[in-house]
Image (cartoon, rainbow, N blue to C red; front, top):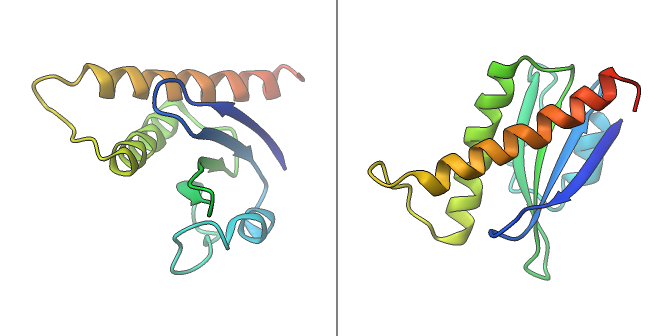
Length: 122
């Protein structure tokens, strides 16, 4: 399993990006901090979940079983943005969506960079 954790600007919390062949290790690490009703299923190619800690700290985890296409990254970024907005009590505004667009682009860039580094052996 490869992973990287990055501080999320402005909104606080951390983004953790994971590349893993399966979900067993991810399930074991995060089952107590997540809001899961059941562990991750092997049918999932990618997933997003918040890991909430007693201290009030939140880690937003995005995990992939293979190097994703851009469309999969974009899909997971929507989930990430929604979790951050929900946790911060923010409402998505269809007429003033610059904050949503900024955060979506930032998440995409971090995930894309993570996988580019893997592909380039870094």
